[in-house]
Length: 230
Image (tube, rainbow, N blue to C red; front, side):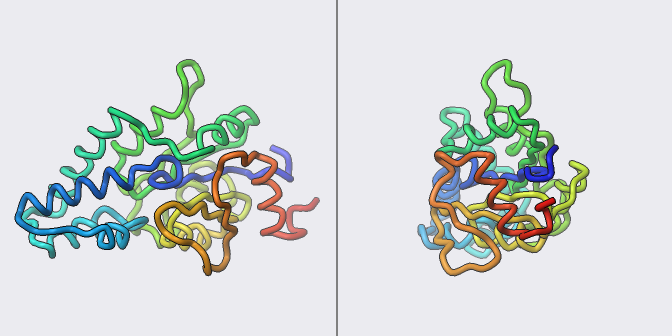
């Protein structure tokens, strides 16, 4: 790996690689209304980028008489059912992944979804014969502290054997970007359902469509200045 390329590129999943947020919201609405309650779009947006455990605890406070793990399993099952019908890829994400794999740049999927969800999405990325899309997957099952804590990104860098400061992390939510920035990675926010304007410590791209490895390398150089110029 040459010094002017990222040592690794770390992708968030929901909202960054795939647009599953509507599926999660539908599952939340379905569950809450089945117990006679209501769930608004604003309440769903408040959970974007947070852990499933936090989502489950909020749903319990809204009257769901289940343990948190049962809520998590139920929501995940419902979303997976939808994903198996149609994987809603975000623009440019798979194309960028393919370029990274072709150039030999290590990649990781770093998500607060549970492992079985993350592995299924990761397996759906490549076309037959392309090989694995990601070198590693770090999910909510693998960490103690969810985003915005940097543990997931630090864990990904550790498993890849690279320095976090030589990585680029791609996110779509404030909690995810906070985690990426705190890890020391060069962070880029690609807004989807949540506005990312006004944050600090990261770059905002409107979309990944048309973005390339060269753009990621330039982003890292700008973020780190002369540190990686040699």
